[in-house]
Length: 117
Image (tube, rainbow, N blue to C red):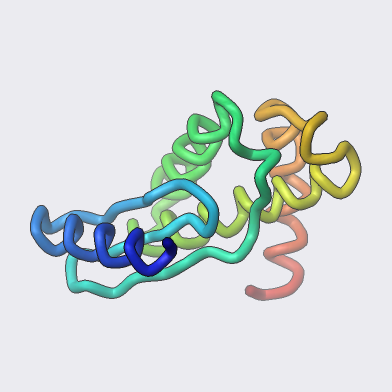
């Protein structure tokens, strides 16, 4: 259940003093202070080999631009899921690939910047 995943993520982050991204339905970002964020974007079409690599690359790119780790993880997870939702809307969950996620990231980032969120 989501509650078990949240508890496990929180315990791991607090025990090891790290930021954790626990991918899955409602990806979780957990911080060493016990704060937890549960993402609401994304869909089952993203449960494919390579999707996590796209997420890791996105978070790393945000870190490379000077974003704080918490924001890079939290916003990276959100944007990754939103790009996945855009793919599902146009290609369907079964037809989308991790490459499609990468192709949707520029428009997703642009929409995120325009909305100020």
